[in-house]
Amino acid sequence: AQTVTQSQPEMSVQEAETVTLSCTYDTSENNYYLFWYKQPPSRQMILVIRQEAYKQQNATENRFSVNFQKAAKSFSLKISDSQLGDTAMYFCACGNTNAGKSTFGDGTTLTVKP
Amino acid sequence: KAGVTQTPRYLIKTRGQQVTLSCSPISGHRSVSWYQQTPGQGLQFLFEYFSETQRNKGNFPGRFSGRQFSNSRSEMNVSTLELGDSALYLCASSLEAGGLHQETQYFGPGTRLLVL
Image (cartoon, rainbow over all chains, first blue to last red; front, side, top):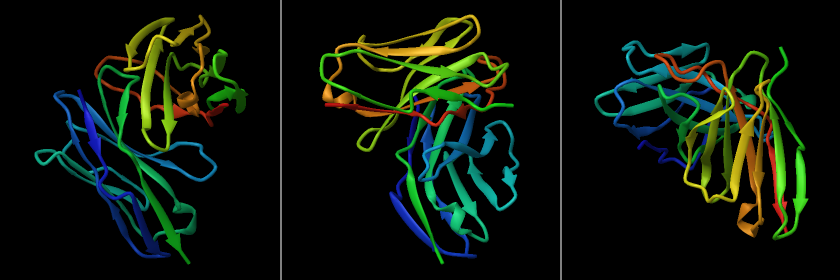
């Protein structure tokens, strides 16, 4: 069984600043994948970034980067130069190689303020 | 390439009725997963289909069922609707299930179901 915990229900950040969203997980799998998804008010869930657990290097996608601490089972998302369009609910998720099923955290609502 | 599509987008039903939701995955994707999203419970995994077979199932009662067709399109059915079934139902597709690499799931816009 897998569990994903996001301890910050809500966060806010000023435009152009940096914010970090926290996520911890637990899994008994050796091979697994971690994801951050973004769900804007329009409700379309989109992938922000993904990390393969077997890779030590932290994933980066433009302004989005992760801090993957495998031993601590921590997977935080850093958003640099925050933009108004980053306002959304962010979900952390963990999936194993038995694909098609991911366990999601409860989400963090991020508001970027002008 | 067209994204994941779900129909209908909105649905209102009454208790005791049944409902069928449809999901068309991205072309070439063979895995389709269904999730229920509610404010109180977050995103809960319902089931996943691959090559017309249910591969994974979440902890939902038997009133929730699904199927997948040979063209990878999937439907989920909820019978004897209860008020608590009101939720956003999300469908996600991925290129391949299993193996060493889990492919990224791409989500549809969801079907919002309201049970009165």
